[in-house]
Each structure stands twice: as C-alpha cells, then as structure tokens.
Image 1 (cartoon, helix red, strand yellow):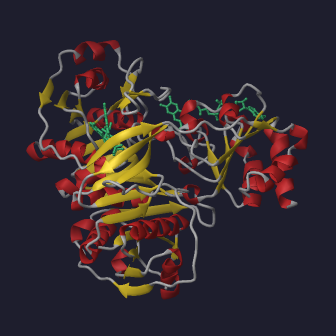
Image 2 (cartoon, chains in turn green, red):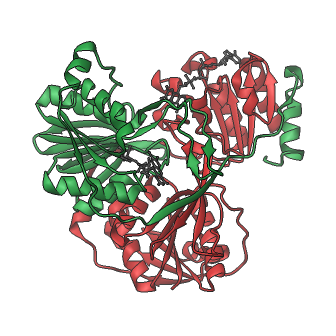
Image 3 (cartoon, rainbow over the protein chains, first blue to last red):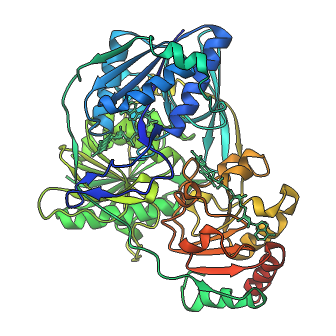
Length: 245
Length: 320
Ligand SMILES: Cc1cc2nc3c(=O)[nH]c(=O)nc-3n(C[C@H](O)[C@H](O)[C@H](O)COP(=O)(O)OP(=O)(O)OC[C@H]3O[C@@H](n4cnc5c(N)ncnc54)[C@H](O)[C@@H]3O)c2cc1C
Ligand SMILES: Cc1cc2nc3c(=O)[nH]c(=O)nc-3n(C[C@H](O)[C@H](O)[C@H](O)COP(=O)(O)OP(=O)(O)OC[C@H]3O[C@@H](n4cnc5c(N)ncnc54)[C@H](O)[C@@H]3O)c2cc1C
C-alpha cells in the first residue's frame, strides 16, 4: 500500500497574528511554525497503518524552503520519504493541482490530509484533489481501517457520525481521534536526516484567487462584570441591552 | 447569468443557514442586475420549496431523484454543476456546513472556480470581485480577489441578517443525469442526535468545560440550553475525556461557531478554544477564577461557581 500524506507548515496555534507592508504580508518574524494539527493526525494514522499492514508513507508539501523543518519532523515520526513542491502555496486550487500531478505520476492508495489548514481554514484541498483524480473524497474522517482494498471509516456529520465503506484509492481529510499525535524519538530524528527529500517544480500556474490585503478584527469592548448573587441580571441585560435572547 | 444558491434541507425543511445563503445570493444577484435561483436536492414538498422566494430566490430547481434522498457531497456537487451550466451561473453561493464544504470543493474542481471559504460580508464589485473572508481561525480577515470566471462563495453563519417578504418562488423539476461514480461510498451506519438544536446552525450556544468536573454534571448545562432553545457545546478536553460527544467540541481543532450568543461555563479560555468561538456576537463567561483568560474576550462575565450560577440563569430564563 502506498500512502501520501499532505502536510502544511503553519504558525503555532498560540501565535499572535500580525501583518506588515501596510497589511499586505503575513509577519513571519518570531513565529514558530508547526505541522498543521490535523495533518499531524493524518500522519500518525499513516504511520500506524504502515506498522500494522506494511505500507510506504510519503510526505508531501507545497511550500518554500522554510517548510523543511516541518517535513523533516514528519520523516522523524516515521514517513519514508518526502516531496516538496518548491512554490508559495497560492490557494487551495493551486495546492490541489500539485498533489494531483504527483498522484497521476505515482498512484497512491490513500491520500491523507488534514480536515483543514489552520491558516486559511479552507477544508477544500481534499475535495478538489478528489475531483481532479476522479476518486471519492471524504472529510472529516475520525476513524480509518483498511482491509484489503476496502477502507472502513467513520466520518463526523452535524450532530453525529456515520460509518462508511469505500474502495481504495481515496482522498481523506482527517481529524481526531483517528490516531494519537506522535512525537519523534531520537532515533527517528537521526534517521530523518538521511531520508530522501525530493524537491520538484510546480506543475501549472493557475491562480484563481489573490489576497489583496488583510485586516485585524476590531477588539471587543470592555467586559461587563455581574456579581454572582445577581446572576439573573445577566438574563435581563442579554434581552434588553445585547438583544440576543 | 443568474446567481445560483445551493439550499440545504434538514428533514424536508430549508436550513436556517441556507435561508441566509439564499438571501445573500439574492443581494449579490441584485448587485449584478440578475436574478437568484436556488437549487434544492432531496425530498421536500412544493410549499416548503416555494418559501425560498421569501428570502429572494425567484426560481427553485428541485432535484428529487430518489437516489439523492441521502446527502451525498459528490452527487450533489454534480447536480449543482449541471444547474450552473443550465443557468449560465457565474456565482454559486452556499452555506458552510459539512455537506456544503464537501460540495464547494468538488464544485471548484469541476468548474475551475475561484473559491472563497468562510465569507463574512457581501462582495465588493466596484473593481473586480472581492470578498472578505475569515482566516487564521477567526484571528484575522483577508480581502480575497476572485479572478476565475466562475466564483464560489461559502458563507459563514451570521454573515447577513435575513429579511423576508411574502414572495414565492416558482419551482421547476430538475433532473440531470446522475453519475454512478458519485455513489461509490457505502454508508453502513448513521448515528445522529434528533430533536436537538444542531450546533453549527444554532443562534444560541451554551458551552461548558472541565470546570464541570464530570459528565454526570451536564444536567445544569442542558437545562439552561433547553430553556434558551440553545445548542450545547464543550471544550476539547471534555470531548477527549468522552464526557461529551466529539461533534460538540468547539475550537481550533473542533467546530467553529459564530452564534449570536455564546455562554462559556467553566472554560478557561485557551487561545485554541477562543479560535473557534471568537466570531460569536456576544460572549458570556462564567468562571470561579477572576483571572481566567476568557474574561478578556468576553462581553459579560460572572465570577462564580457554575453549580450555583447556571441553575440561577435557567430560572431567570424560565421566568421571562
Ligand atoms: C507565505 C504563505 C502565503 C500564503 N498565502 C495564501 C493566500 O494568499 N491565499 C491562500 O488561499 N492561501 C495562502 N497560503 C496557503 C495556505 O497555507 C494553504 O496551503 C492553501 O491556501 C490551502 O489552504 P486551505 O485552507 O484551503 O487548505 P485546506 O483545504 O483547509 O487544507 C486541507 C489539507 O490539505 C493539505 N494541504 C493544504 N495546503 C497544503 C500545502 N501547501 N502543502 C501540502 N498539503 C497541503 C493539508 O493536509 C491540509 O490539512 C499561503 C501560505 C504561505 C506559507
Ligand atoms: C494544537 C492544539 C489544539 C487545541 N484545540 C482545542 C480546541 O479546538 N478546543 C479547545 O477547547 N481546546 C483546544 N486545545 C486545548 C486548550 O489549549 C485547552 O487545554 C482547553 O481549551 C482547556 O479546556 P477547559 O477550559 O475546559 O479546561 P481548563 O483549562 O482545565 O479550565 C477549566 C476552567 O474551569 C474553571 N472552573 C473550575 N471549577 C469551576 C467551578 N466550579 N465554577 C466555575 N468555574 C470553574 C477553572 O477556573 C478553569 O478556568 C488545543 C490545544 C492544542 C495544543
């Protein structure tokens, strides 16, 4: 079985987001970059499937050289090799084109992604890739097992979940509790240094969207405190002042 | 040339988020000097479908093939793509939801469209086609220029306040040919809470965290939610501990909500939790620790014990 795991290099979840150049550029100064938390779940499940069933796991990223620490970490966690498409990821369609191009060259049984990136929060790349390859896409997947050429999955739906079976190949967007996040050990970190990381040029240059500028949300007004023994006042204020109930 | 809106059904009724999408789409149509057409897929009666007119759609295309009764992102995307082609639509609007997200992506792939997820305002068409979207999980906004010929807008809840008229939409049967490949998934079991207010659709949300101490204490949370007709939600550790089902978990790695009112009881307000709730209109925080970080992001706060405060609030709501 061949598994492709697509990962993003994104600002740590505690980052205070700021912009420079008159709000046209994300300010990378001082920002700690991590593997997308959902992508981490996808990778962890891929490594578990490799250990259980035998599989090769390839990590894939569209990004510039500064994404390499994240890629190396994925190799340290247990992926076998990596591909980086050397380009700024313009948008979901562009990223999907790159994944589809690689998958057309080397067919994968499973293309695992995160449910969504935590920078642009699109939740779109898996569906677009599925469409480009003409195969099913399923997200968010919280459980995944493979028996022969059949995948058995649980997908979250609004207010519940459903069990799904489908034939490989598939594109999946993953979320917890599909696996536990893995932390690389010393041996993993050492071997990761020598695992192959192939750098390729982008296929296609479609840019269907472009961000003109960014804006920060307006700060919330000061909090109005209500003494605990007058809690019922809150309900009155929600009705007469905030007008939300 | 009309603006096309995918309107989602829940048990035969148009979802509230889809009514918003129809209203939003009709406003976009107005800006473009054209009309709004809604596509509805699955079983629904004519009267219900015609209510799309109240929110500004002049026409409803109803795809009622029995094979489409169960929600299916791939098949539904094919139906909407066929409708877009028939209507010559250049703008497709849908509400964000699990189904809507899956469809938007497949549609973008089919139509090579410029896709804006998490749209929060009407577009600016003064030069080009620019939409404001929420990024970094609500921590910032982007003004995104959609350059492709076809544009897909997935709108967040509470993007627009709907207004209703008494107009009705004409309903046309729509029966595009269906593609077998779109039915490749076999759903073997479905578990869905019924009767509850769905969290992503809810106007009011009562959420609780580890401060509740254990699942056996959720009665006081549910009582307040019931009195308010609100949905219940929880923090990540609460769903990790299996105190509550995963589909109630909000935050960076859970559901993102933007209700009119978010009440947080016994939740500390970690940045990853805030990320999923910070676009709520009004935030109420109840915590026994006056230094809990959540108070900094709240509109109203009560320093107190949830076990005393929540029942008091429930009583006050019941007395309204
Ligand atoms: C400096 C910089 C600037 C950027 N500017 C923009 C911008 O202006 N507009 C914009 O839309 N995006 C921009 N991005 C790209 C963004 O990080 C995403 O890669 C891309 O937009 C897809 O985002 P999404 O939220 O739609 O992905 P989603 O559909 O939410 O992602 C789902 C999954 O797809 C996979 N995936 C997504 N992106 C990648 C990737 N790059 N490589 C490998 N797998 C991936 C992951 O598994 C992810 O969990 C920028 C990134 C960087 C580093
Ligand atoms: C990558 C990543 C992603 C994450 N994603 C999410 C996410 O999506 N959603 C999320 O919620 N978290 C997320 N987290 C976890 C987050 O950092 C916090 O750990 C979590 O939100 C804390 O949950 P809590 O507030 O319920 O618990 P705690 O932090 O333990 O807070 C409990 C609060 O209850 C108060 N309390 C206790 N008893 C009472 C009482 N009797 N009356 C009133 N108040 C009381 C305490 O003062 C305290 O403030 C993520 C973390 C990481 C690293």
